[in-house]
Length: 404
Image (cartoon, rainbow, N blue to C red; front, side):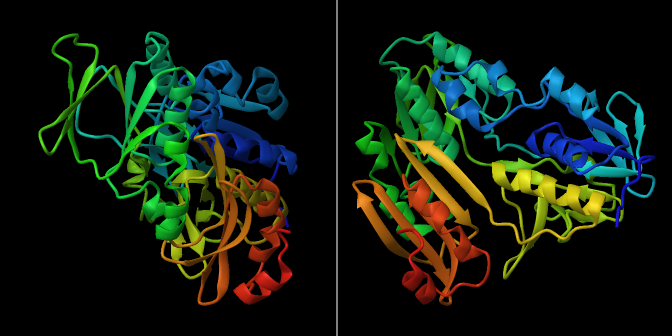
């Protein structure tokens, strides 16, 4: 059963990974109608993970991150509407109003507007984020101006903060990572795994400071271009640049009067649909998850999987097997990988120790495996993926030991 016909026009709003993959997947599964991709940035779709890794360390140019090259755009026959934001969606008419007053009329709409960096209420020319290509270009240009041994403060020791710290150190600069919690990733990976990872920064020579209560960032009065990080206890930290990595929030404001259900993102069903002819994918989508209601997961692989699942449903009417979320983070010289979507308070069992800072663990809840996490164990982790394809008991997982 095909839900799309050659006469249809699919308007994809959001020119990030999820939006671009939606276009590619629709074409790959046989959609022959018109495709329009709307994005508020001037750049064609690009890949974000390398921004905090290869680009920040100086190994890649920004151009290297481009996904939608002219050749790929031509091959996919996608009409690009860049440098213009969507400001309103008429769900019943499937039309999108743009910030310049134009209206794009479609028969189906994909909401792929993603998320933006969560901002702190301070302003300084020395304050940086790493979310967009322009963000990365601005920070990389600043780092290029600095000399060996100069300090770069990083507020937030999550995945972005750790990756930026790693890249900054690779440049010969001195990252100082400021984390409000007792340990990095405590509320993401849970108490046990955060303890397993807490020695990584020190082993890599990174200055990580926990339980830090930052109350402001001000321009350094001596230079104007540098910064002073202000703490609740009255102390200060001088830095040549300050990078903020404290999470992200979904871009849903433009949908406020659309009638769609908005609850930590755009609420969708198992087919990624939020209305009869409107879908949402990627970071902006709040989708059903067993035992947890709806969740929003900001992972590269989830965005890709959402796009593929929607394309198969709209073009072929096919149901998609249960999504198995996956993410990775290269930090402090190691690779952290996760399969599944466990809760931070799930139980964790270490099942493999392959050497110093090389291990694999299983998350479980009520005796059922909910996730697999590994440090520098990519093969063992992927061998364990079948444990998440159904309800596998922890005891059965331990007996099978697919990671060996």
